[in-house]
Length: 140
Image (cartoon, rainbow, N blue to C red):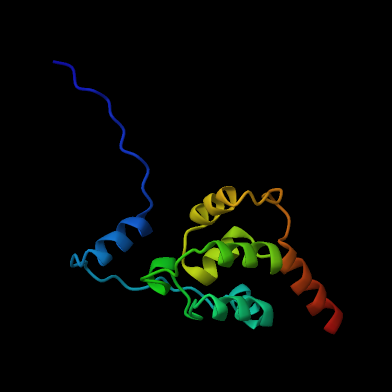
């Protein structure tokens, strides 16, 4: 009898760990990776506009560094208003939205498609980062 060559679907480790934790499975603790202070995180949380959107949508500010699943054991719900405001109004990229919500960027990109929000071209800086760098360069 021949055995079928079946490949397992690709599953992200953070999703598995999040699901296991939510289901109350006991997991062996491992030390958090040593991650230096992230200036981008400081810039995101330093933005009054970003903080207002997060506050309005009841998203906690998590300044800790480390893996996404450690920073956000329970990610904030990804509402249409939250995604639209952070992406369109604040100019954040999907990876920057991931940093402040705990939701994987793939979920954010899916929500953009559901909302018929056109994605920006790949590469280059997000509008938020362009403005942040221009402001910092002007003040120095």
